[in-house]
Length: 376
Image 1: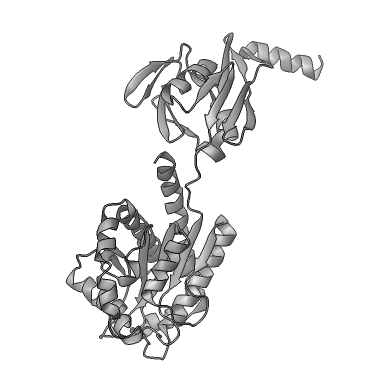
Image 2 (image 1 turned 90 degrees about the vertical axis):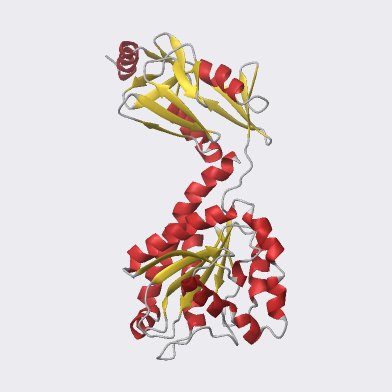
């Protein structure tokens, strides 16, 4: 028996016969053309969820997963469909729908009838997905994923930041970690990374946030090193913006905001205080919630990555975060005022570990955040 005859016999035994009538797809607005292969199962036309995923995942964030109770979760265009194996019924937005023929499993692959693709999807996305004479027209979602990040190495130039007992300058540690993080984000995720400074120069707090806004950044990451009047303080903490501060966070807030009066001249503080109306506008957006999510991921990964004391995620009224119209956080990577942590922070290998931990956090946040923004 020839190899071809053997394959045809095997397909007939399984009840699978490949058709030439694949489903043509047109992705708007650019008219990109694709096809979905159609197969014959139990004498009905079916499409593999794997094939849908392979052809559309990069555009529509398609996903599916199976559960032990014979449910299959399918995510398409930001919406969830729940199928039941060997049943024609599925749920969508808490309602039950019928696709005429059951979801089938062949080996490790799941198949939906073409009626789901050609008839049901246009019903679920009216005015977006259309079946025109057997061709499925799908809107190409606007790409709202995280593509551009602004990293802000705190202090610099005439403002050295905190200085450790052994003379280590915060501004240089911040810059070193920021440059390492920039490299990881560009090389591993292909993101565009802009920095408020790439060398030892002074940049005002307002100009840092303005830089992020002017460049329409998707995330703003401000990198700092902490300090305390006592050399025993230690650990990592991550902040996002708030007008309400705890007693402990107010001390850090005062330290970071003090550079305004020191290096930006008389009356500069009033300029930042006048930004309260911007802050109130920001509080009504989704950015604080996502800033909290990002801060939580960064804090967890940093503590685990460098085995440091966990001082938690906190909120403070940092001038450098005010008016940032994107998720924005400020990281305090350790206490330069503590001789032991100063030595660690000045160590290039330790700086690599800090950058790697922050990178992993941003990577995970981007995955979650991109899925949310796809549906908004």
